[in-house]
Image 1 (cartoon, rainbow, N blue to C red):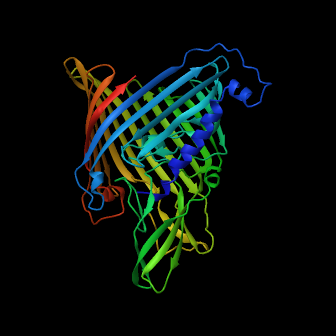
Image 2 (tube, helix red, strand yellow):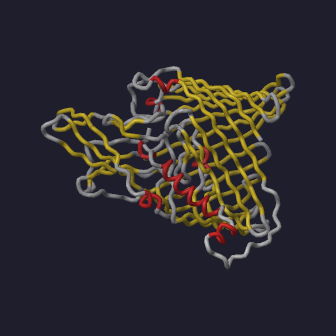
Image 3 (tube, rainbow, N blue to C red):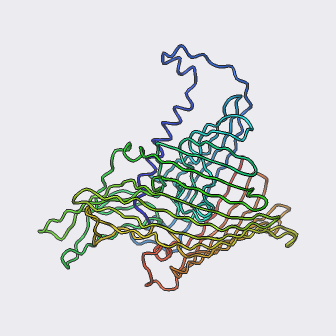
Length: 478
């Protein structure tokens, strides 16, 4: 849906590779490079704890796309690895994943977390690297991607990623204070995008190209797009700061979490330059990614008791105005004010099993996008008009083991979402059977729909209503 995520995969790969080489360089490596004054310390350390998952999956879409019939079926092989290593003076942790769709350019590698941490069980700890934190309940539950970036090559399976930098944390059961600072920015990752035949295309059903029609002097012209990718350092070298405070225990009793930050917007913004040859019915458009900043604030209030958890959340962001060079236009992000409520509860002894329920509501004011010129006036053409997928949505989810087959668990997951602004719904179902402790057979499906296809055609559910699908596969855990 959003072209501005096309470069995130390359940025992540560059920054992660550099960091990995730095973190894994041993003393012997340094000595081999002429740093002979470093003596290898003698440390007592515990064995590394390693966990992983391998998933094989096939996915079938119900409706073919005429221009891309090859996208009706896909096969995915993916793996995920988590590791923790403790030494007498420092701890190291990593959570990485990768996968391939068995086609050219359709592979990915993601670092969800990778950090060094001060050793010990003391309340005060420092972390250096990429790490997830609970900045906002709303941002985490609804995968807004405002506080922490997302990995979303499949829009229905977004996953929150950590921020990258230095974390200073004082954390006890009753309260917590966290400070964060970074000189590095790694944006959200979406489908890879490329130029082809004058258009911007992707080998993904979760990307919609911008319109190629341009109204010039009451005459429709064809747009020919060209990508201009700036120097990586210009995009990565954007820092930020954040602060978070918690009072109370989120697992028992009342609690409050307040967060504030000044950070780059996790979704890259786009700027473009138009060139019109009056002798031809064509407009050449150069598109280039850029980084925008915003101030972001969030407040969560909650209560946890036995099998019930409830929370109310508020989140606000104020994008910093950024104007382009002369003859260029740029996306101007409108501020967001969002409110949400969530209830989590579980019921035991239903068919002798326990079911977990989740009820959530989200309301967003603002969040539009308008392209503006170098003088700040609105352009007459806008690439994309919305920052978020859902703006007025109610969601219900249930998960649990409903039955046993051959004395092995059969787990059901069900989620239904309705967005009142889009007049549409999203249904997710998944079934898992565990023939053994390490193996799981997975089957599921996703159904999207709207009540009126002519209403709000640029909305998320309307754009992707043809992406109903079923999938199945197996997962191995070690």
